[in-house]
Figure 1 (tube, rainbow, N blue to C red):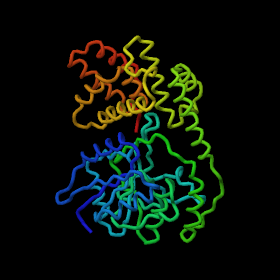
Figure 2: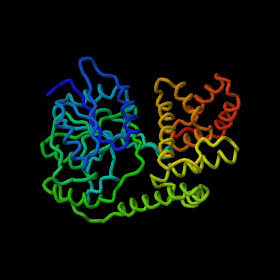
Figure 3: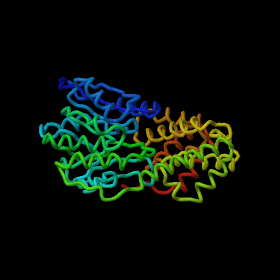
Figure 4: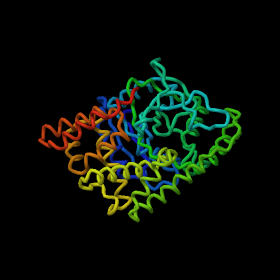
Length: 385
């Protein structure tokens, strides 16, 4: 076992998000005497299978299991986890967890410890921690980030898709009498760029979990959930909107989304809602259509919006190279695309808009500077903590 190696293990199905995840890993401060490794798992049959294979492939004592859409924005993350693991009783840590699992094991709405930044601006904060510093022992943590200092096999034998792998692993640590904790975060450690969760098998895996861990707690499958139906609806509407865009019926997409607030809440609808709003604004203001849905393929559309969002988030998180990011934005997107993406995805809206305004003034982009200045004046206040 290499006591000074930290392995970052990422199960990935999206190259664009994977590269952004790696970008934030490249910014981490590495304490003297330690080294890091990145292990990417693609094509896994399940999360447990992917993580198990990666775990066996490295002799790193410390392993950071994370989604490809989890971006570690705390530059001192490694120092902070090593501090937690000075206690040999602690086996695993996360950034979001629950002190006590509900008796029906419905974990995804039970988080009550920790905090994480989320990707929807008006709902971007998940914050449950008190002001008490130190660590809080929990029953379970969310799988967006799981850090271990001991190896325990993942339950590949019973969890064969993408749900409950995280809750199960927490209970495997409990069986070994090892603590699972959520540390106090002075500032947010992670930004989670989760679009939507495929939860069609959630109840199926919840039932497996309940049967397996009766030795720890008397769980009961008391209620079926609607998660499977909601997940199915998301994909049906996603297919419908994709078809309408391919047919050039952008106005229909814009109308449907703005007539139904439930559609605006569905995770996989955000890109379509944002794209339709940008397209309409560019047309109404007779600007060059940089995000032209009449000719843009659906995959290209999603990628372009994702790249735009990532550049804006780098600015929000004060990554080095602000001017390079802004130059890439101005060259690739209209001011309207930038503005509405800020409204959708950025917490410190006026701060980011001010960066862009100052850049436009400095580079003599007078028309863009005037437009951004007007936008700053009408933009809602930054979202409070």
